[in-house]
Image (cartoon, rainbow, N blue to C red; front, side, top):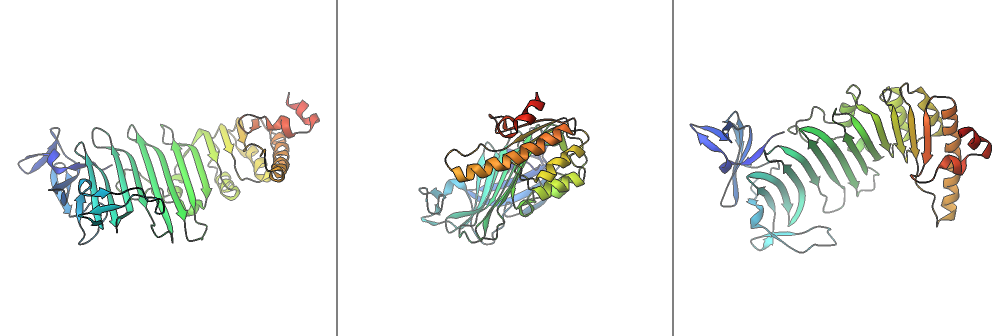
Length: 338
C-alpha cells in the first residue's frame, strides 16, 4: 500500500528524501499556500516521477486544501453538504491532510462531491482503511462505493456496492470478512452480485486480486468456519460444483435463497460437520405473508431433517431464538430428533 505524505514531512539529504531516517517510498504531496503544486513519486528516497494532481485528474481546475472551502448546511434534497470556494460553488479538487499524511481527496462539481477517496493511515502512514465513492448527484445512473480494511497489514474486510437509479436492477452489494489466513469467513451477497464483482478499484492498494472471480480462484479461499448471507441459488450451486466449499466444517446459511434440492446437495460436502440454517422471524402483523413464511419453513424443515438423517451433519434451524424444527416438523419427526 502506497504511503501518501506531505512533502514537508520528509528530510532532504543530497537529493534523497528520508522519513524517520529511512529512505522514503511512496508519494509526497507538495502543497504550498493551500494549493497543490505537485505530487512526487519517490522510490528508495529518489524522485522517480511526478504529476500535478492526486488520484483524480481535473485539467485546469483548482487543486486546493480542504481548509479553503466553506461547507454549507446539510441539504436534505441532495442528501449531502455543499461546498463553496471564494464565495462560489466549488468546482475542482480538494485535499485533506492531518498529522503529515493525506487523509482524503475529492472531486467537486458545482459545490457537490461526485468522487471521493478517504484514507485512514496508521502512525506510519500505511493505510488501514480505504473508501472510495462515485456519487451520481443527478440520480440518473447510480452510486458506486468500495470499502477496504486491513489489520496487521492483512486485508480484513472488503465491500463493493452499487445503488442503481436507472431502473436496470443492477443494485448490488458484496461484503467479505477475512480471517488471519486471508480466508473468507463471512460473505454477504445481495442482488446483482456480478455488477459489483470489482472488489479492488485501483492497482496500488497492495492486493493480489481485483475481482470476486480472481479471489475465488485462490486455493482454499473459504474458511473452515463459514457464514453465508443472502446468496442466490444459482451462485451457491456454482460454488458447490466447483468444490469451493469442500473444506468447510461449520457452515451458517442466513436467509439464503436456495432451493430445497440445493439443501439436499449439502450432503456432498465431505468436511461439513455442523449446519446452522437461519431464516427471519415469522411476521406478527401481516398474516397473509406470515402464512406463506410458515409454508416455506415447513418445507425447509422437512428438507433439513432429511439431510440430517442421511448424513453426519448436525443441523439447527431457527431465527436466532425459536427452534423451527420444533415449530414446523410433524410430531412423529420431532420425536426422532431427541
